[in-house]
Image 1 (cartoon, rainbow over the protein chains, first blue to last red):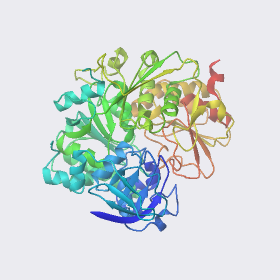
Image 2 (cartoon, rainbow over the protein chains, first blue to last red):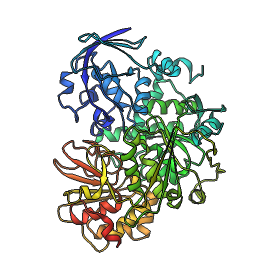
Image 3 (cartoon, each protein chain N blue to C red):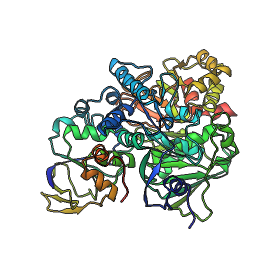
Image 4 (cartoon, rainbow over the protein chains, first blue to last red):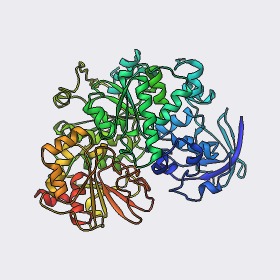
Length: 166
Length: 418
């Protein structure tokens, strides 16, 4: 599947407190409500600029800090279709895949804020429409491919009744 | 080939000869979630159509991050947790019992050689007692509750050796901050740390827990230490289980070896807004502070309260400064009461709040005002972390926080140890 959207640039070490602040996430399980506050402490105007299907493009260590799964869930609820980063913090990375939000590890240095991107989720190829450049993302481990292809861990467990080895 | 602690624990729990890089499904010895993560775990568990918790005796929920509840909506989520734990017959640690990580240790839920997951990133704290413990998200936790197991990628291990005797006024927290500053916020991503050396051996468990607690601030999956006589003594009276400590093989393979000599280490401070923005206290000395926090899963243990009480005893918190003290658990609170530490804090003008996370994560009990500087013993100083993106958080040891609150500005605590 190829998805298309606009890049929103962020720097290194975007932590999960920035993605969704603790002052919101303890109050509710309503992800649409949390989605209105994503990235607020880092960029208060972000939610207003975000269009459904857009991408977050960051440097290294995206999603560091707290284990809050509300981070990928709120991004997804806000309309973010995928996050591209040089590297991800490990708990966030699992949470993102577990919730069916693609997290692509790739060289993001040539992607500018506002660039239109086309992402082939099967091959992991990212094309920058403006510059014509393409970058390849690192493949996921087998178990993560399985979870993502089921749409997340909840659906995976529902279908298989538990975790299964290859 | 020799194995690291991580490889041994994950092999023992998966029934496989597991090496770094392998994916294994491993049986869990304990799993927990707290009030910021458990409600979502419940939702995921129900989404998975779970009808039973595989091992109720290995599970617990903790109400600690917003406890007592500051809001009706939070109260409703707490009730959801109570009802779920009651329905499936597992432990619920309610308001006032303390921070999940301290209670997990106090109650002997995380044991040497054990495998523990927690829906809280600082679950890595139990590495200090030789448990492979790591933070996960709510849905992974739900899968653990349902099946009793979880998949893991066996991590590569970075060996960290600490040598040298600490000078007076310098503590485990200063070592931990120095490590984060040196290794940086993602320097150990996906790796386990094995932390040891003569300084760690000489250190009491309270300090070791502080260091393992900060492993995740370097991106690490676990912050493991070997068990010794002090570790085994800690569990006396806390568990009837046979303890099975795990040591690395002499020929274990490490991805990197890092050595620190702390003989000349001075008190460290992490300045806003990242934990790896670390320098000597002298670089920020004199910065005015409006609030101090002594507590949390990083530094709310008896040794932390003792050193802070020693500094504030007979003194007064500076005018215009709020010093908030939060013992990490009910057990710690009782000990602090028995030793007269709570009286010392109250006499000095500090505010003692119930065992729990206090204002660390910005939900209640001390949200700072616009433009205010906070000096805290917690583990994160991200912008907005304490509930106000217009505040500035500095991280330091309990001694540095106590000394700073007496002066109303960031202060080198060593003057109290001459």
